[in-house]
Every structure is written in C-alpha cells, then in structure tokens.
Length: 490
Image 1: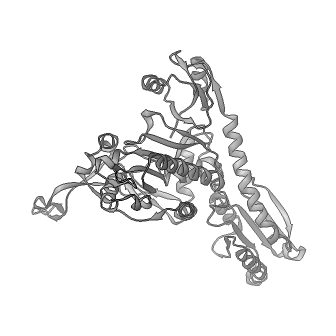
Image 2: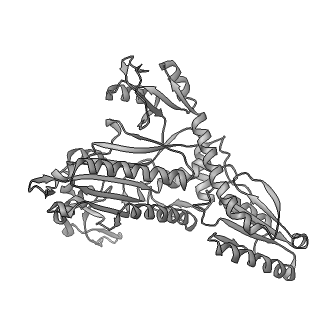
Image 3: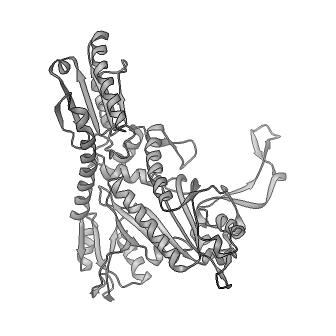
C-alpha cells in the first residue's frame, strides 16, 4: 500500500481530509454537508461512547430519548435560543409527496402541508423542557439527570468531515434542579468529566474555562468549556457544559413546590460532546504515515502479521500466533491476527500503520526458530525483537506506556506553544505563529469583536485557573484583572 497522504507540513487541511478518507474513517455522502461514518471510524466513536456513558452513569445520570422533530413555536419561547440557532435550522413543512402530473418524478403534495412546521433538532432544550413540565411538580421529583445519545442537524454552509457537518452524532445531557447551587455544581462537574475523558482516554490535554458572553451557548447564563490545541496550533472546542439558570423553566413554565410549600422555577443545565471529538483525536496525534491512536480508543490494539512462504509455513506460524491471540484476549486486549492470503506482509504493515494500530507483531519462520517476535510501535515507528515467551507479558505495560507517551507529547506541544502577551505588537506577531496567547482583555464585547475582526483570533475561554493580576488590555489599553486565552480556532 503506497503512502497516500498529503504531507502535514505542506497542507494541513488537505492532510487531515486525506487521512479521514484514506484511513477509512468517513466519507462525504450524497447529501451536501453530511457524512457516512465508516466501520473503522464508527468503532472509535463507539469506544468514546462506551467510556463516556460509563462516566455519566457513575455520576447518577440515565439515558432517555426525545423526538427528532420540534414544533417551530417552541423556539420562539426562549428569545436568545432562537436567535442563536435560527440560521442553522432545517424546517419540515409537508408530510407527503406525490407523482408529478407532468411526469417529472415526484413533487410536494400541497394538500399535505403541516399545520405547524417542525424543526429538525439542532439541540433539544425546548422539546425536553416542554416534557419536563409534565414530570415535575414537587421537590421530590428533582433532580432529573438525563442524557440522550442522538443525531442533530445544523445547516452549516462550510463543512469538513467530523469537524463541522450538517448532521452529526452527539450526546446531550439535560438536568433539572431545585437550586441554583445544585445546577452550577452539575455544570461544573460535567466539565471535569469531559476534561478527564479527554486527558485520560484521548491523551489530549485541555484547558478548562468559561466562555465570554459573546461565545456562550444561546440561552445560557454561563458556558464552561474545554479547549485543546491541534498540531497546527489552532484551538478546538472539545466539549461544553452550560448553566442555563431558569431561562428554559420560565419559557416552558416548569415549576415545583419546595419543602417550604413555595412554588418556584426549576434550575437547569445542558452539556454535550459530539463526533467533533473524532477530528480532535486525529489532529492531536496523527502524522504523515496515518492515524496514531491512543490504545484506550484503538479498536484493534495489537495486530499480528505472519510472514511465510507456502501453506506449511503459515500453519507453523499460526500455531504460535493463535496462542498469543488467546493469551492477549484473556488479558482484555483487543487483538487481531491477519492471516489473509490476498495481501503481502508489506501491504499489511502500511495498512495498519495508516489505521493507527498501536502495536504490530510480525512473526516469520526464522523468528520461530530463534524464539523471537518483531514488535513495532505506531507512536514512535520504532521496531525491536522481543523474546516470544515474554511478548504477552510485555504488551499490557507497553500499551500503558504508549498512552502516557502520547499525552506527554501533546502536553509539551501545548506548553511550548502557549505564550504570555503584553502588547498589541506581540499579539500580531504571535497570532501568525499559531500560538495560544494569554493576554489581558478589558472585558468588553466591543474589544473582543474588534480583536476577532482584526486577527481572526477569538477568546477561547477565561481559564478556571486564571489568577487575578492587574494589567492593561492588549488592544484598548484599558485596565484588566486577569489574562484570557486567545487563539485562532476550528
């Protein structure tokens, strides 16, 4: 299999697109802006889903499912929400087609116009809060801790596989609480759940923070986020958690009777991550040879490739290989023995390198005679000969080492490319170097917008660990109390 990727340093965007397609993760569909997630890509998403779902359930959440269609009138009930999503909404107006009397295929049946148009969900706050109205009467009904795995539609004009598509997969948590303190605690808890997942499972370091008013989720009082640095220095928002206050409860008249007998509005949160994480994973670790996958997310963690001539040699190699497979599976390791006779070993080596399998074992007749196995690491592209009797014992520790090494490498990149900025002149230089910039900001939306228009850099977040310090806004020269994170972003 010949190398098929545009070099990353030559054209980062094309490298990314090549990799998604050539590694069999996804492809564009016949529907503009929508993608087909192929088995290799979906297996990684399933691994993400499984780990996240376990974390949600460990924090007391349960899964449910709500309708894909939302009555258009629901969006008008929360003003900032409709303003935030109106331009991205796909609208269903009719429920039937009919044959064109002129013989030109099918046309919309105008007799089948909906009394109320339906929005294909871009997010589910409105339909869920209309439902919660029927579920909540008393403090005894709270909290409600629900998550939904679903697809959503946001009619994006410029799309890119995984990073921005008209339809994408995600999870969205929606919780209801008796007090403001409970809701804020929930929103913050889920931010930390996302950050832990990103760092422990994706091996992707993140910065935790809150969004500015300009960047908040439509309808939220506070949006918490995790921001990650990609290999080109751009930021990618990897997850968000929103404190919604009582906005949606008031919009849908969701009240409860407190222990003291008072009738009060419920407090709300919502939080979500999407298949955008697939793009983050690819751009954090991969190289010009293909995907580099953290072992915890790799559908296949170890692949074994036989090197042989003729059926007799294959049978001898297979006895040893199948024994290794059985022992690794017993340890919970995802292993594959590729004894296909339709492709040569070199082709297979390139294929599994492209697809990011963390460890590759090659076993030939000469290796059997010497009691050795060739082990190749995908992250470092290094190879070594391992004693056959010791290989099974070494692999679990090696997978842990690879996972840790990928995180350490990504963390060093983040630290090496994060700079403190004190003047506008420095800002203009460093933004062109694709750096994460910690700079003072005067807190005004006008300044934030002016910087964005001048440089295409946005305030990614106000880091949770940002310490208070007197300073001067890099753009306006006005006083500032803390630094915020600026970067260009996906």
